[in-house]
Length: 579
Image (cartoon, rainbow, N blue to C red; front, side):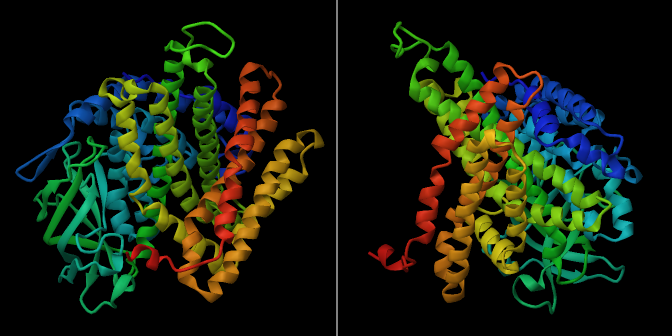
């Protein structure tokens, strides 16, 4: 079965040598006393909990799944006990405000610990991390009374949450939602309608669940402009059950340990979050945190797949190595090395990516300088769909390569690899498919502001590259070449967009991947140079440099194909599908 070793050395390298997290956090008064030594200690504790308590549950969770009977969901064996210990150890409260009973630690802590927990069990994290996303929503838009009522409960983990957006007839087109909200004399609302695909919509880990539900108040405008957001608890303050019914759970391709529920609200009592008809704006903080969490989940699963594929390749003997000897460990075969290095490059590069963005979030929230807050917030907004779309797609490649390394043994359940292949598929779908992320990036995050946010990213990369020593030109030039390709693609699509919006969107997924590679080329260059300059450089640092070279020489050339596809003549495709 699968084994997992927390990536302690790589995390220490990224935080200290690449991101200089100590300097960044010390400049934020809220976190001036929180150094990377504290963060890495927390990571070690999370690693022990994940490897010893959570990982052993993952295979059984896949095999048994959740069960539904008489409107109630029971989670897989061991989940309830592990969740209770998770709460007892204080993991849900890490980033919550002290006023809510939290530890007020940086957002970076959430990023690190949930990468680790996601590696141990994607399904467990689906229950355990959603409190953070819901809290972000309530802090942003809820009334003071709602915040005081629910934030402390979310901080302790006593209450979990769910996002109730999708309806059977609407799918991702939320403007078609029909769930109704009728005002009540006491200032609350009565919510009636049906929701599907609600992760953690019912379970036995906590007595109460705070559902965040998009619904339409009578007389509201049509489409997404008429949606409002409501907090609808499973259990009301008087201890009575709100009329919310779980009509079943989905039987899915993977992620069997996470209950994906169909919920029916029959005049259930709820409270408005934010302003009427501005439900999407109120929901955005939760949705964005969930998108970033998707990237962390993809990263964790990728790391687990890589670690096990590497160990298997070192032990499995088969075939003749290029330098003689038979049978040889398959890690000696060039194509096995290629597959493993592809996993390593995407995983370690993705790790630098997500934790860099987490540090940007801390700056956006707490920097004393207004311009720094604005710039970092703009970068986070730009990079959120890239993390969601790029890292989750890379995870498909990583788990596929792990399956290839294991060969036939990867296709059977005993090794655990086929579960990872199935579980990680959903990360490209939930919180918006890759196509939806790509449309968001191109139209809302780049073209909508005439490329100002993108310009900030490109300037950041260019400024960094200009400050590096000429001996590192191989790495800096790779980053700058990719910047030039993304800039050329943006200019081309901006012109096309004024002529034909629909045809421009043909290139949006290619554009997102090009943007992803731009960030990864920049971060791999930073990693390589940091490894070369490390005070106690050794074989581990040399391996980091060689992985950067592999990424630049063997994976980054994808950008040439992407740019060619983006700049290809735009033609309607419907006729090709009409036959």
